[in-house]
Amino acid sequence: MAPATTVLMNAFPISPRMSAHPLRVTPRACGLMPSLRFLWTIRFVLFRGSFVCTKKYAEAIQELKQQSQDKDQLDNYDLFATALQFRLLRQHHYSVSCNVFNKFKNDDSKFEETLTSDAKGLLSLYEAANVRIHGEDVLEDAVAFTTRHLNRMVQELEPVLQCQVKRALEQPVHRGVARLEARHYISFYERNESKNEILLKLAKLDFNYLQNIYKKELHDLSRWWNELDLISKLPYARDRLVESYFWGTTFHFQPQHSYARIAVTKSVLMLTIMDDTYDNYATLEEADLFTEILEKWDINEIDRLPDYMKIIYKFILDLYEDYEVEAAKQGKLFALPYAKEATYAVVLGGQMPTYEEYLVNTVVTSCIYVFVTVGIPGLKSASKESIDWLMSEPNKALIASTRVCRHADDIAAMK
Image 1: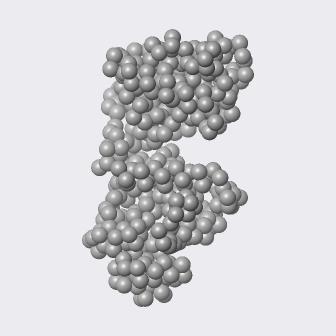
Image 2: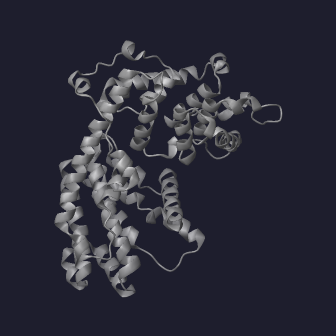
Image 3: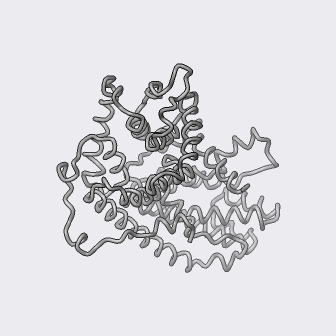
């Protein structure tokens, strides 16, 4: 099992006494107030749509946004609070100016040296700087400043903060997988002397509850995959069920999105087999023939294929037949043409591209379009209008995502 998946499947111990008595989280019990520390901690708790992750949290974020307009209050915030408020609002899609950090710079436009001993403040600024956008020079400077000083002091920090800093330097929270970051943060928070015991129990119960859903899904997928027995029929293909399921959890981690997780998992398995076939096994003539027949999307064309490609072709058609049934059941048949088109687009190729052509191709070869379309039937909020917008050209948000995904994958492959 991949290391990241192992962390995801590693449960928190919950005592019988804890589970026997339902937790009642109230504002008084949590000391709930629009505090930055509380908001940051509560961000890692789902708990099945309870007040913690919905109404009260949303209200607190909105109040935080209103507070950000109060210049007098902002002037009183230290580095830790300023950076945390900035990051929380950015991560909730609010427009916040990076100018809030100018007060921590000297006349030479460099960060004050007095900040270099504030480990918590530096860590908060480091995480905030990782939600920067192009042209924010103050945050570019912040990355270099915080990275240098956090690396300098990390070995001298107390154990809990040291672990947090090491984790952040390895991978900022913003770039992490939601449930993995929750797992790490709960472990850090558990060792914090000022922790809220009720909130900690709630977070553990929530994590274990969702983890049990993941285990059941992975169990069902394993049975389905073993019954297909494709790997014995296609021994050149990579067998990556658990890794593929991890992709599904990164796209849709919430408990209600079981179908979307499973759909993404099956799509990753499908694309892995297609990738291994085109890159490592099929002849050029066989690859061209498969591309031609896949475009027709007709089972009656299967006899034109070599025997091993018949297995792949039927696997793809069966997946999308199941997809069509589920889409019809959920009233989302409008997504089917997009899903088929996204899969076919992946197999289109040509000669070795120039870098400029490579950038254009990343929109397709990253497979993001496949992943976002296959999960549509399991997303209640998805409408025809939303998917029409999503697949419209050029969709700058989606194109940016595909390029990040493609580059990250290619860099990892190179390493």
